[in-house]
Length: 475
Image 1 (cartoon, rainbow, N blue to C red):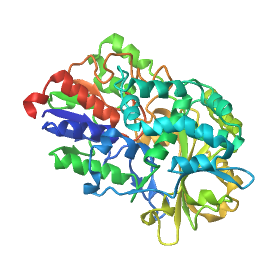
Image 2: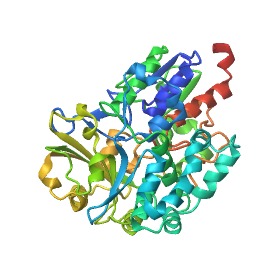
Image 3: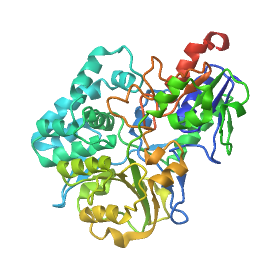
Image 4: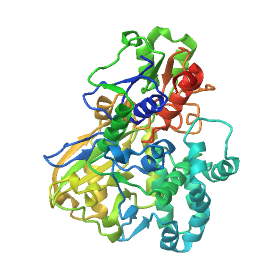
């Protein structure tokens, strides 16, 4: 066997495809009975209601340079663009919306539109160069001007950016909701980067959903991989490197903690100590609902959006994200709501709907946040609880059991602050290599971090090709 990959999330599949495209014989091993990692869909509530277990909305799925190099439509993947990528409601019954059109968004933001346009237009125009630089390891930039433009805008805390650039509280809250995807206090440096990235993607590719659920992405990637001759084995948990057959390269779609368990004493002591210092951040608590009708939002824009951010003001969002780092809980947490069934009829029986939402909670939390999340939605959609037919909840521990990469419910594979974004999992010239010559990491615990984009796996596979110099022999 040329290569063995452990883990079938987006990065494991991306690594497998990248190597198989170079003529390698690749076997992918998955512990669960179904592939996908965070890209799984299941009937969690009632028969006929299909819910995305983790990832739901996929701007990076369309914006990823790696995914864009594949024609996954041949393997059944169909992207659906909601009428609006995002809406952000307020207690007065209004909402601000993010349109796929940058010009429409600028007009929609009133007196803040001009500054918003100045902030986003260069990034939207230079997305291809920006994606190459940002969605990869730290290196000399091929597009230094683009990266410099982004870096100058991205370094400040998101709270500072929102307060300096925007005058209306609605626009500040909109930007705060975008930046809060970082799962870090918005007073921290570089949190602006997350808001900029998601806003840019909305205007470049939208915030699409895959028809049939996120499992469709995994199935399409698997179909592409097997079409290249790749082999997939499910239901086999790899507990030690020593149980694997000989291979030129072993790529692990796992966290540093699992690498320590799988590789054990084969790793040098210094490298083990470095891995032990790797930090995981707060987790998520998620609820899925089977609904008798769409969520009855007061604001009309929310009824046309694939994603709705809940957080009445920038101050409310900042407070919510701050307390979880202190091991506490917000009574009004920032929450992300997805309503896929408004645009994809395969998600629920005729006339019925699904709802998907999560909030951020302290690392390893077991607290049930269902009532709090539902109260948050009810603030902006009175009568929401009356629409609920059934619900399914997942704590951080449920998430870690579902996917061992989600340590303590951390869906990003580790904190993505400035200290750990490009140096994950340890400071190393090539972050995908390990001291073991044929063992590589390809998970979201390597750059560029969390998200369904496959870029961690792609770069890890490129590291394999470069280090082992098999490319010429096998092309």
